[in-house]
Length: 58
Image (tube, rainbow, N blue to C red; front, side):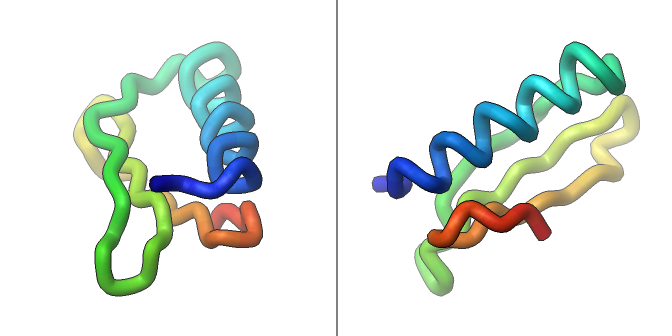
């Protein structure tokens, strides 16, 4: 289960990707090894992001 901080980071990232950059989001899941949220986005599925438990987007 994502933390509240991760969900806030996901909201900010989703807004930036879809409304500002006009890029689709294809996948959002939790990496069981690190407990980071993983986001796969972009027209060519070429944008990858991880949101750490502290809410940092990498």
